[in-house]
Length: 118
Image 1 (tube, helix red, strand yellow):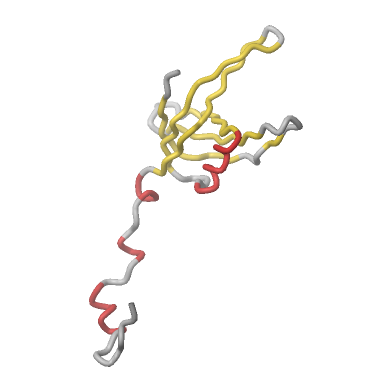
Image 2 (cartoon, rainbow, N blue to C red):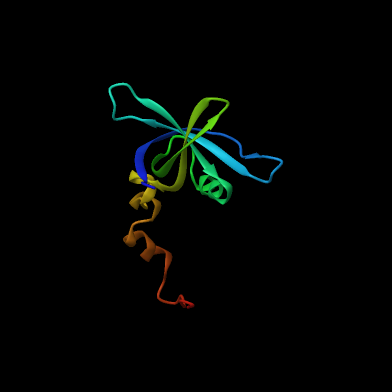
């Protein structure tokens, strides 16, 4: 089966649902900002893939890799977008230089008499 990718901003993360059969899923919505009319796309993370959403937050830009699944129930047809990889995109994926003090400032914290313990 083919896989697809979509990038956007996480809009909603829903609670995990567990069914009596033991099956579990967690849905989330990604808004595609690059269209003239942004689209809200709902994805599902099935079973152990739901844990991927623990590292994602609302408002974060992500790239979702997913498969398309379909089924029929009572003469109605349904389509599921099953996410199996979620990657942070942009500034959230890399470390910012603002998080670390400048190197010259660190020299003031050490004196010649300080022993470095490694």
